[in-house]
Length: 218
Image 1 (tube, one colour):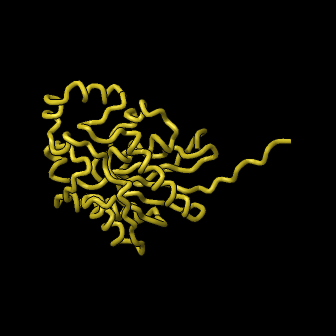
Image 2 (cartoon, rainbow, N blue to C red):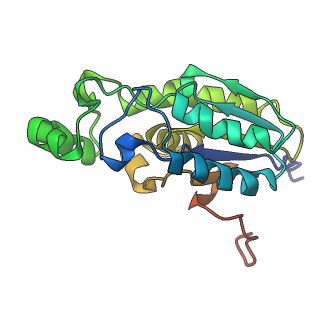
Image 3 (tube, rainbow, N blue to C red):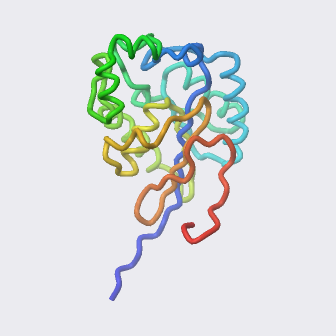
């Protein structure tokens, strides 16, 4: 006699990166430094919020850093939802790297940077390990996702590095492979859907509404 299959709840998690900041333009490592959105960043958030609102989210949770809070506020403005802020969703603390440009990091911390890119556990600038970021961020996401109604959608407004590590953790990928997920552009998002065997990546670095998967792997 076969086991009764687990019924899918059909929940979705939308992990949305904040809009543009001046440090993004200057290619400065922001980390947990609290940088505001540029005017372009606000416009990006406003445009993306209209698209995400059409997905009828049931809840919003955001990092408490200003660039994420301001991005989330644009979605609040076009929905009937409130937002919960959680410091667990902040970007990686990167110590002495924070505020440095990409070129300055390579010049001053070249070996450390190369080790990080190889997938080795590195405390960039004396800061957090990527696994430590996942340790604090993934439980926040799962906690809020667990409160969703059947078929509900949670929007998580966070930061590129934190989103990547959270996706890697929720998909059960080895930490060395998290870099293979690639980055997110400002105000783009990734979508995780709940399937029969857990969370699966449905969209990554998207800036348009999801298209249905029509084929053998739907």
